[in-house]
Length: 408
Ligand code: C5P
Image (cartoon, rainbow, N blue to C red; front, side, top):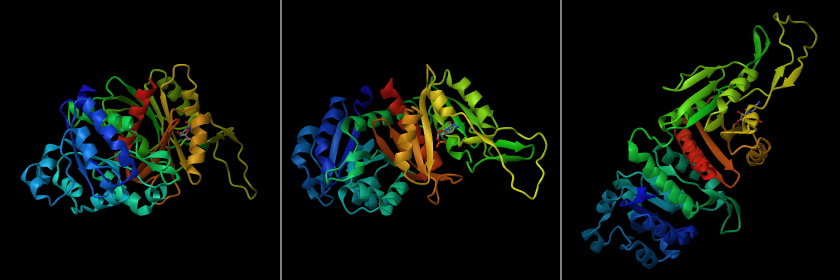
């Protein structure tokens, strides 16, 4: 963790119960050599005292925009310039809303506007507040501005509710902060964290021929799978896409294997997965194919036409069953009971991670340029709010990398 040595991290604390975890966060970051300055909102001081944060950080705590003494020394502009990363933890719904609107009505929000440093927020709030459309809209706005959204996690909440909204634990936040610096350590444009890794990604729909002119398929555009491929490639991985028929342009520098049917995709996936580090099954594979493809075009008749369908092999489950398997990630596109179905698939297909999205929600999922995901692994749930598929892919690649390194 020498990566944190000498780094200037500004920790913004807002008024949530998870504020009680922040002295521990400061201590762990200082253990790794980071310089920490703390800015607290009025709400934060109701949960934890500035004196505590001053003692653990070894620096004075700033809490007022209009403090004449403070403005003489480390004023808000100086703090904004000093930081090479701003982390707001916990970030309440109110703080998120104010930052999303560009308000500058306290010291912390003013610094957020005045800084050129990257900003990361660790949301923490009641699960209903997290799911509120207003909060989701605000988070999506921040994500679209490249603000890093770390969490929230899921579990029992201080108010007694259970669900998404818990601030990530201190070790998870420390990991994310390290990864942030690692990603920027090599080159600002090209991360090399995945160099030496081989990622295989299935994308797009499959087509199951009925006769020479007709087929069964679905609305998958391939955009999400291609965005993940691009993000992994840009992070330094060597990437192979096994793609069903799509009309979008392949990402630069990825190897693309074009396939048509589920059986073809299955064959190539098993071959490619053998020496892959990560396998991401983003394709919308047709569950069934006709038992016998008609050699000639089926002619219309006045009676009903019956097609006999047989089940296609489950590609991702077969990859996960390989003796030497890659870190295996599935997708679940659902129209209801997202969590129940996604967790069922995680278990049944023996996946390391599953990214679930609600395809019944307008403006996201199939064919759209935007998406939102809930990512489940065996131990945790992370919400990636609505944003462009490109941004979402970068966040998902980071999550996969984190989980993958933990499982090694
Ligand atoms: O079971 P369901 O189709 O909902 O599961 C979705 C996940 O399984 C996706 O990751 C998809 O790519 C993968 N899948 C597969 N082969 C199939 C069906 C789904 O790899 N035949």
